[in-house]
Image (cartoon, rainbow, N blue to C red; front, side):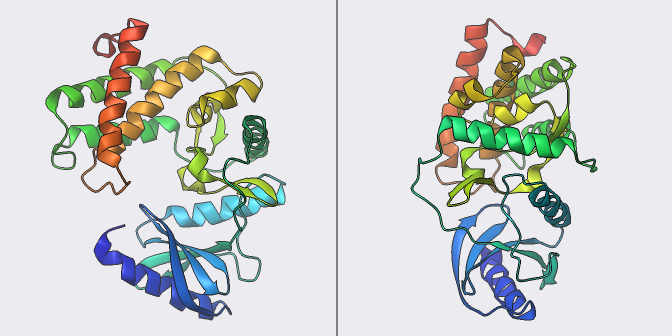
Amino acid sequence: MQVSEVSRAVAAAMSTAPSAGLTADGAVVLHDSNKLTLRLLPCDVLARVAPVGNQVAQLEVDLAQRLVESGCPVAALDPRVEPRVHERDGFVVTLWTYYEPVTPGEISPAGYADALERLHVGMRKLDVPTPHFTDRVEQARRLVADREQTPALADADRELLGDTLRSLKRAVGERGGAEQLLHGEPHPGNLLGTKNGPLFIDLETCCRGPVEFDLAHAPEEISAHYPGVDQDLLRESRLLVLAMITTWRWDRDDRLPNGRRLGTEWLRRIRAALDGNGSDAKGA
């Protein structure tokens, strides 16, 4: 979120809590990216705040309700308030249960894989309109092509990312594997270790595709505990996801700490992977 918007976003969240019957006279910023995540006190509720143009909030609320009802390992909305999207001062605000974190590193690879598999099982039962994973790849391709939005990206790196995204989007899509509703970004930052067990958060990235696309966001050791993985598809998906997240790091509006350093490192990894595979993204 833009620096100029943060104070207004915090104010929007704090004014939403009283209207929902909660007391909030303080806020702690937990995460700041495309949306702001806050812990409101003393009511101890998690507030997620995004510009009003973010219409994914309603989908996220609806999905969370249905998945929690199905027993899936996802974070729940706060049970004390009506499960809906609130609008305040140009922002949308949603109110969630705050989970006290447990010791970092407590989620084992097997536990991580089990939680993801249970999430996928629950998601297979849902029929909701969501983007295809290739739509997200196209978002990355458009960003690569937009020199104004990615001004620091060198020409050779721009060509590498564009070619890799195009070729691997086609390669993964043409494998013809089973597709279903996915989390979209089930990386460690979106998995909470809680006293209730591992819980996934941030459902705004949900899309349709093969489960290997989700597994590509998780640490490599997780796939060894997930049944029925197509290893070739997973390998291609990992490189595709790496190209996507590398692209985000070159967005001039990216606010991830050390994002540019990571983007440079990941470009080297993409080149090494393509050289190691004997692949040429340009020719694919």
